[in-house]
Structure formats: structure tokens, C-alpha cells
Amino acid sequence: DLLVVGSANADLVVGVERRPAAGETVLGSDLAVHPGGKGANQAVAAARLGARTALLARVGDDAYGRLLLDTQRAAGVDTVGVLVGGAPTGVALITVDPSGDNSIVVAPGANARLAPGDVRAAACLLQASRVVSAQLEIPLETVEEIVRNLPDGGRFVLNPSPPRPLPRAVLDACDPLIVNEHEARVILGASATDGTPEEWARLLLARGPRSVVVTLGAGGALAADAQGVTRVPSVPVRAVDTTGAGDAFTAALAWRLGAGAPLREAAAYAARVGAAAVTRRGAQESFPTAEEVAAL
Ligand code: ADP
Image (cartoon, rainbow, N blue to C red; front, side, top):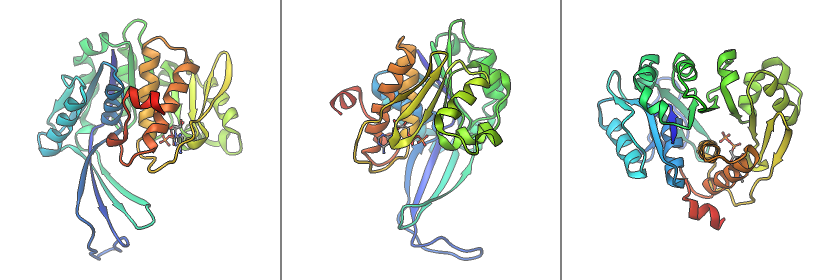
């Protein structure tokens, strides 16, 4: 019922005392390898909540590709749409310093080869979906092809991350466009410099989406549509690691919308899921089940 189209990466994480300068070598901690990428994260988050979820993505014919396929299947995601080959699996090289700050280099690999033709070839998956959720760690042409191939009555949810200016046809299809503060600023450009999140929500809505959600971290979120802008309260929790909170929020929102929930109700549920995700370390490892959300 939910189709996630997006990236799948292996996150390679090393702790360092300090980052190497040019030409220098430093020793780090043992390597930790985690399944990641916004597409893979969203699919796992939705499946863990109990959503019937499929992933359309591309990985390499290599060990990281197999790790990603295995973790998707273990979470219950339908991987018939995960294409293999064409380039190495996408990798994020992450160093973490003692203050917890990340430096990240992404090698997009197979994610950059998820092509418009792959979307056309996945027509059956698209037609079987009530909601299609995408992000921008795959080519924009591929996202544009998704918009052209949405099923009748199908809903399109976009988290434009990493953010870039969007063509009108993509903006018009979003219901909702889901942005954090950084993404809102980039998409609005100069018109956002000194506004409030409420003003960003209205400005984004005027660009074409049928609805907009602005996520505000511990501040919760804003839901905006023709009925106006509403604040979605956050759930107070002790935050341990905010990695993946936005992916968990987006997945939960897309799933509830596909189940027929109104925007504000779906966003309130998604805020509970996002809050649960920040109480545990990691991205996919931190995503809650529906029972854990209910117990929050
Ligand atoms: P992103 O990870 O994309 O930057 P946010 O940080 O805005 O997204 O988080 C997405 C959602 O997760 C928020 O709208 C909120 O509902 C929830 N969330 C994130 N951080 C916290 C927190 N510290 N406490 C409670 N909820 C949080």
C-alpha cells in the first residue's frame, strides 16, 4: 500500500579524536556498518509500524547491497522493486568526533543510477500503491517520472532532502511536502530569510503543494493546507540521538495518510513516532513498533 522510492546506503561510521588534515592519517575506532539512506530508512520505519511497504531503489551487486536487501526483508519490506547492479552500493563515510559532530562524504553509487526507466518498469508497484513517498537522494528526473506515473487517486509525499529548488510539476503533486527548517529555507530561497515557520508554511503552500508539513525537531511540527496552518504538538522525551527522526516521521505520516487519516491526525501520530525514534541510538535501529508508539 505504501511505496517508498529512494536511496539505500551503507553508513560506515568511525569515531575519531580529530579529523585528519590534507595528507595526514589518523587512527580511529573500530568500523561500524549500518544500513541507511533515506529511502531504506523510511521503508523500514513504515514496515516496523505495521505498514504494508515496498521499496523501489537500486543497490550494487556487492556485500553492502546484500546487507541492505537483508535488513529490508527482515523488517518485512517487499524488496521486489530493489534493483541490483549498475554501480557499487551507495556509501556514506562518516567520522564522528568526541563532541558528537559528524563529517560525512557520500558516494551515491547505485542511487544515482535509479533512472526514470526504472520507474516506468515498476508500473505494477506504483499502480498497487495508495501512497508513494520519495526524497532527493536519487536523481530529480526520477522523482519527476514518479510524479508523471502516480496511480489514479494515489497520493505523493515528498521530503526534499537534500534540498534543492523544485520544478512546479513536482511541487504541485506533493500532498504533503515535508520539510525541516533547513529544507524550507533552501526551497524558499531569498523569500525565507526572516520569516517564521508559520510564514514558511504559507509561502511553501503558495508554490503549489496541496499540503505542507514543517518539522521543528523538539518543537513538533506545523501542518498546513487550505484549512490553514496548525501546530502539531511535540511529545516530550529524553532525546538520545536524533538521527533518522525525520525519516521515521515521514514514513509514519505517509502510512497514516494512506490509511485515510486526515492530515493533522496523521501528523500528530508521526510526531509520536519521531519522538520515539530519538529516544534510541542509530537510524533504522531506533524506529519504533506501533506498540512502542502507543506506550509512549
Ligand atoms: P529532521 O530529522 O528531518 O531534521 P526533525 O528534527 O524536525 O527532522 O524531526 C522530525 C520530527 O521528529 C519532529 O517534527 C518531531 O515530531 C520529532 N522529533 C525530533 N526531535 C525530537 C525531540 N528532541 N523530541 C521530541 N520529538 C522530536
